[in-house]
Length: 126
Image (cartoon, rainbow, N blue to C red; front, side, top):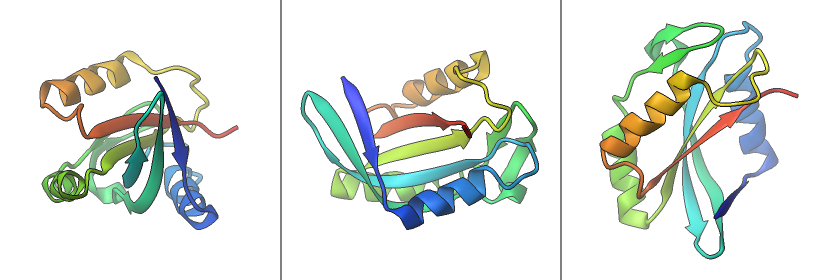
């Protein structure tokens, strides 16, 4: 199944500025998204929640370890409204594929039972 993401220009600008602040290090944000299920799922961003840089335990050119303190509140809102919780993180060095760390992170999230209301994405600056 293909997943498409729709957002406003303002939301895109907010994500881009947060994910690519010019320091060359990865960053992360969470988005609550309405969704339309079907042969292709469409996620419509309702709100953007940038993870503060200082809330990241690690933030380097090829890794970000972020605080999950806001996750329970966002997951509860996602469940209440049947929203998806979209995790978006940057690869400012232009990595075109998911790294082993990204794959391991996705597996941990699935193991936590977050896969039903959780969708993950990676962004890179072109």
